Image (cartoon, rainbow, N blue to C red; front, side):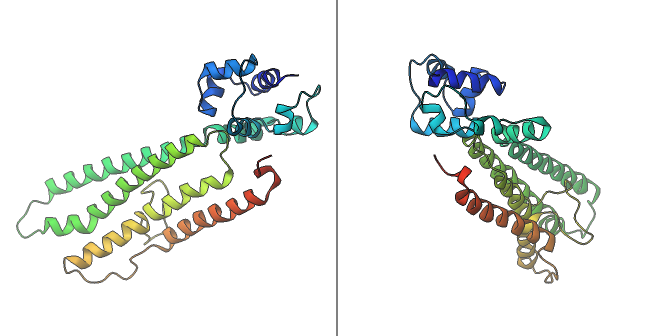
Length: 249
């Protein structure tokens, strides 16, 4: 079979349209159509991405073999778990958009609570500015940074569509530990929910306007989640480089 015939068969087996495959590979639908008609060949980087997308070797794609190798059949996603892994490999970056949206929800909720509290606490002697610095500004800092960082992560992840690995989820844990998740994940009693950065901001602002030093100014839960995410990224990256399936054929 030719390269175009193999690509068309693999795409059909995965249930992808030409438009969907083009989106995964960051090319136009016309380019995919030309490849399948053997009117053009993709560049080397695209061939590697195609091989990883469908779980076949580059040799199988480039050499005109008559039969599809057994390794290709074995790596074809099967069952619910296989479809979940296939979805994550192609669309896992959408999880970062969910995290970014949650940051926006947290920001809106913080603003709403701040305005409501301001309206109910208008009495002489109340230090509104000091209270806002203690409670609301650190939360706003962490939520804004969470929304921005998660958006950047989503855009970067989209470029890796078809090549996302399990260890990339470590980025979400790292962001959650550094910037917090608010009420999305309920921390243990007495722990903060604004992340390491939000807690540091609260401590610095509290000290800046003359408040007493705080005892537990960084949550151990936040530190643990951030450390876990960083460990997953580092160890997962090393394993991927050593694994034969993570190397370019």
